Image (tube, rainbow, N blue to C red; front, side, top):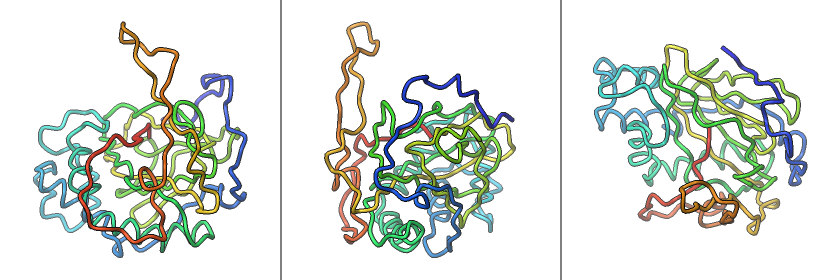
Length: 285
């Protein structure tokens, strides 16, 4: 399985953002961090959602290992070998997990108790609605190589990516990244439930490959910014406008990602309110 791509295949101009946004070298460093998954129940939430929607393989319904059941989603009914945010598994996770107050509260606690200490800070702005990912065994690559700080995403330079696998991940079912900007040492993350990967996705290029393993990957990811580095006026992602022929026009609509909308403050308690599926920034894996 290829875990590297020639640098000449990446955009020649602006290969990396230059600003570190005030982050320290340690905060930007790639780290695999262990935590007690049972304290938050992310795996069980995903298992319950997919079981409720009839998407698990029949043998997995009574599984005592929820993570193993998730990794066999490709054996479930009515599932084509495809991936993306509109596939039935991702839709189930969005509707039943991401939109739930139970998940919102667990995520808030996870950020306070695990992510903040891993960054050496007491408060962060964090992505309110994480991106749920399902990469089925046999499915093609999801998205394309990118760095979050560059066009069209334009995320603020003080961000750190938090990537949380709910199944064991390795090789082609995982996410591939370089360790530091420009290093070009592309490697797949190797992790399991009870671990999360913290990395500089703002400046490091990352991507997926076709999943040629015999296991499906289920994960979610989000971004955090130490509260003292947060910039509510950063220009944010660009949304290319469409011309009459349906092709992207040169002009783009820029939308800042603001506190209270895309981000929330980890120092503020989660409130119990309805959460609509708004057009958040679900970008490439």
